[in-house]
Length: 137
Image (tube, rainbow, N blue to C red; front, side):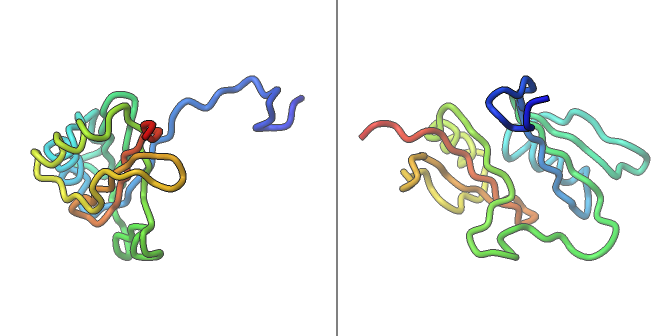
C-alpha cells in the first residue's frame, strides 16, 4: 500500500470545510448569506445547533458554542486566518463583498509568496482570505 500523501496514492482530496464555533448558528448562516453571498444548506436540530453554508464548491460549517468563548485564530496569533479560500477573480469578489458591506481587513494585493489576495473579517472575528495565483506583472 502506498504511503498516505505520496505521489502513488490514489485518493484525491477535493475540498475542505472549516467549522467555526459561534454563539448563534442561525445568525452566522444568515450573515454569510447576506454579506458573503453564500446559500444556507440547512440547520440541524431544534433549536438549531449546527448549520452549513455554501458558495460554489466552498462549504463552511457552524457549530453552536457550548462553553467558553468564540476564539478566532487572529486572537491567538496576530495576522492569523481562519480559512483561505481560492477564487478565480479577487478583484470582482472584492467589489461584490464591499458592495454587500463586508468588513475588508486587507484590500487586494500581491503577496511575496506569489498570490493576489484580500482578507475579510466576519462579525464574529473570523478572518477569511480570498486568493488566487498572482497575475503576471
